[in-house]
Length: 350
Image 1 (cartoon, one colour):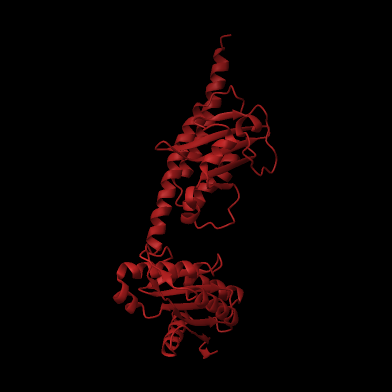
Image 2 (cartoon, rainbow, N blue to C red; image 1 turned 180 degrees about the horizontal axis):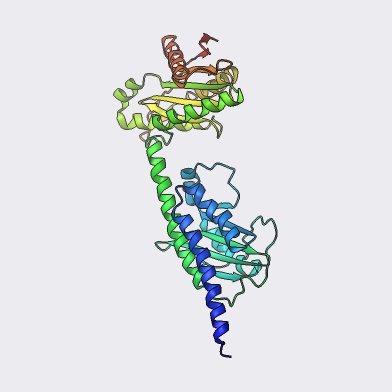
């Protein structure tokens, strides 16, 4: 049946409203300065502007690269899921999603489980593709069973999906560049620039909450001898091994950095001197527990000297004072024969 002029005008006006809403969200995603703002655009602005109950962003995260560049450990922000094995994603959906899907959750999502606050009556599945690679999905949920009907036109949603995929790819690339600027390429730890920034922030936080904060300085013992005896390639392997063994003894809130050469720094928020010494001893024991085995089978003994400093009641100390005391304690540890720990608490020997 032919539509009347009034009906066509009404449809055109409705489409104009929908298009403007999508465009507003697109502008927010395009302008996102980081992944947090991008996620907020999907999770918060999209449901608010489109009168939906919930939106999810699911990212393909092969080898944990995305979680690494975004700094996520076990806890993810609301509205975000990471899939380490994208092949399993296809299994749950039943087939590789190449276009937008609309319908009931069972029809559209298959066995893909989402922790809905309220099970929706209908959903839209938006596959995010870049360069022939599925990088993620956006799932929109409405309590209205007719909101995302299977026979509904998808022109606007398809366009929005393409823009979203481009924005996601751009923001992830920016996060990668940001990480490269703040991490040491050899060890994967943070670099000195990032550490100096974080110590300012963490010390300010410690002052606000009256909590102790500790700093460790580590130095690989006789590292020049390792380089001279086994070569610089072996030295790089030793430094990577040291960093990995140290990382395994730290919490998610701790900040570890390669501070320069064979010297490493660790910031321990909310950690008093006694606890910091225990962490330092675990690190020292783990690093020196067994030699580093080189690719040709040679075994390189590895130990570290560690200096520990703590700001307890004297939180007026500056970051430079906290670092200087840890550095001084490190030199005392090296003078005492290496492979040991020396500590300072607010300027006094512990």
